[in-house]
Length: 113
Length: 113
Image (cartoon, rainbow over all chains, first blue to last red; front, side):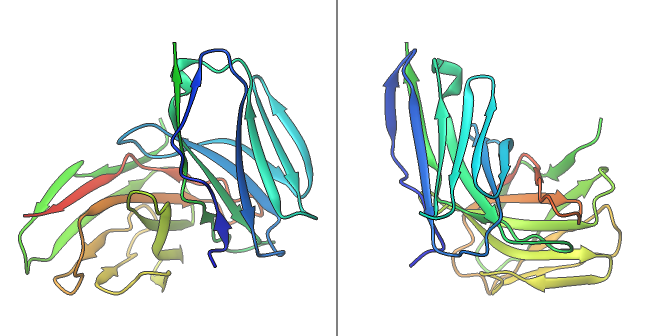
């Protein structure tokens, strides 16, 4: 069993839809939860990170962490064609010193006009 | 501007050859990483380094080697022992604080010909 599971998609939605992206994980030591966006043939860029459980909102993006269920989500409101990319969840369990990021497989999202 | 530079963007290798991928950062980060990305498998950690002149194997280190002679540089050599080297290679760096926000380079696509 992988430490982090993420449905690779692809996920295709119309412009303006609400998108829900999810990851599950097995390692209860994870404390930091991140979402990266990766455009084709580019390096990933950090979208959001959350510490422990709870919600975090940034513009059209909302990240949720449910540590009791070992489940994290990223919601995109009013999705735009420019949101079309692969979204990778990542997690780490570090506290001081080295933080090893464990990535999900990535979900490919296509937002069509 | 601060960032991570990977070169070359595209690289072709003949069977039996060693090739070296370059990664340079000017973010003053202590930790650097190499990941391999294959379709549908997310990012897998090859090697990482927390400090100059020290590095550790990641999950898929066989057939790869690295050096960390300078804080800014973390080159990756793909040796002939790596049986399936065709992939997208990503270099990243982080500070060694608690929050592991990783900054990525733009990647090198290696193809065996």
